[in-house]
Amino acid sequence: MPITKFLILGASLLLLAGCSDTFDDLAPSDEDKRTGVEQNAADFTLANTLGENVNLATELSSARGVVLYFNMWCPICDAHLSDMRSYIIPKFPDVKFLVVDYVTGSVERSRAAQLSNGYAALEVLVDSDEAVLNQFNATMGTTVVIDGSGIVRMNEDYKDGSKLHDTLEALSQ
Image (cartoon, rainbow, N blue to C red; front, side, top):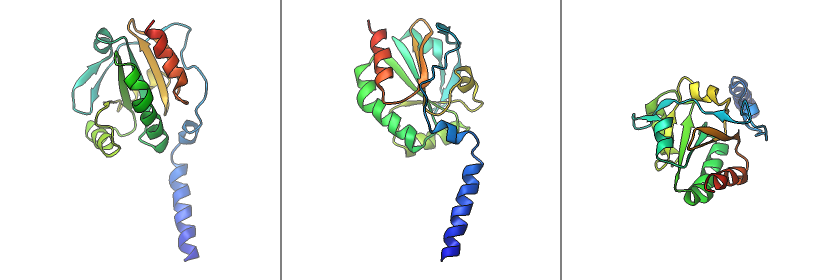
């Protein structure tokens, strides 16, 4: 029996070792990832998990702002999304919240992950080539707030939601 535990532990470590840069994602920083003080968000179009195209400019035209949350479907992301769904989203009905899945690679797999994780009510975008991830210099848990005029007001890792809340409050004034 001890040799079985050792083999399982060894196999688990090998699998984790193959996840380059994943461990960096588990320690959120306070670093602002914007390239300048006032960064304009470049327009993009991604498919959502229903196969429909979602365009940033179109979303901004009908909302006070857009929040992008970069997600890996891990327990940390689940905690962030649960917090947002409970405490942030209800307070800001005029802001569009979009979850960006950059790890599953296809609309079908992303939809399956969305449903199995209990997030059918949130709109999930599929960034299979990581273009939007790279545009915002994002990683797991990065939260980007774009105001109605297309200016990035926040781009940093999600912590406890207070910075996101304060940024969204400022949009409402």
